[in-house]
Length: 246
Image 1 (cartoon, rainbow, N blue to C red):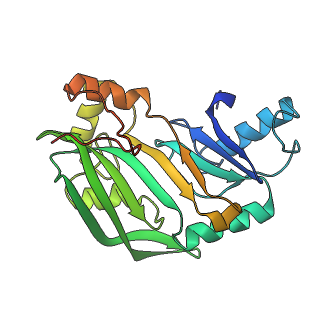
Image 2 (cartoon, rainbow, N blue to C red):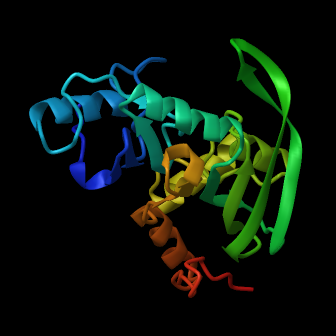
């Protein structure tokens, strides 16, 4: 992979944690056909720029959670074992708040909830496990909707699988959506991936001594689709939430 880590993507560092705004097309870690992952790129950058972060060069970087290679947004990493343990406990206890933004095929209700069992890996074995999410439509028409999604738990491909099961796959998702419409979306809007963004992540006070609220800006790809659809620019209200448009 001919890529370098962008230090401007660092959203937070401290208390043994580093949060980055993961770009599309970069896996979290190497493997499954990829020689380099974001953890490797970050590690190389730290080694080349000693002292810019409070991290010893060569220190192992632990992903606390995962994002799909085609997804973007807030990704939390740990460079201290104690921080990794505390953060992972918060995830396992479902004490972490997670908000995603996704573009899905077709119309959506203003608010709703999806539940079902999806194929997930647990302790090395694949099985069908319960998963759920709630959503709020921010923009949309009969062909496509921009939704704010709050998943419960952290099953693999949870948002993609539940949306597809409800007949509303992420636009451009060649795995869970129908290949022909997915490819048509990619060609029409000039994308080479589906649109799923980890917008916000919040750690509770007990995880690191004080609450941590992280936010990654909406990528240009989302703004491009919104503009081309003529939906009107997204604006945040006084509470920091995106304002929905009926």
